[in-house]
Length: 134
Image 1 (cartoon, rainbow, N blue to C red):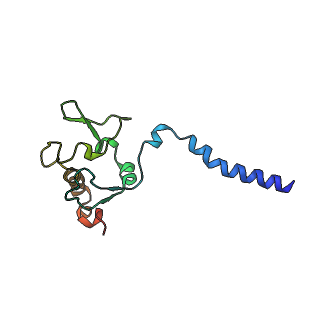
Image 2: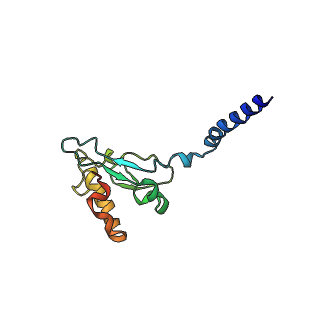
Image 3: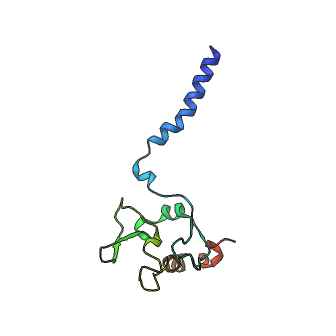
């Protein structure tokens, strides 16, 4: 009897996390990883160093539309709308896309977006070594 009780408790304990995971909403699963390593894959000739990006920490303070956006059929920037599919930045920000140099590569677009924000809010985070770990 004791063995059946212990087995039942263990089974319930092991299944509890699974059923909690099923209870998450679609919005909870669409938020992306807490930390990301950003690296170029489309412009491989002279790839910049990967950058570590604390995605979760940024999400806690900023809305998705602060960084994410889409594009119109004409290739113009389109503001983010909740629930839209988020493409990799370099899908559009790459050397073959024909964008102005400022936005023409993933590296340039990230530097403009990230460094401009950090210069205004946390200047100490604009040093290369903050994102580009050795």
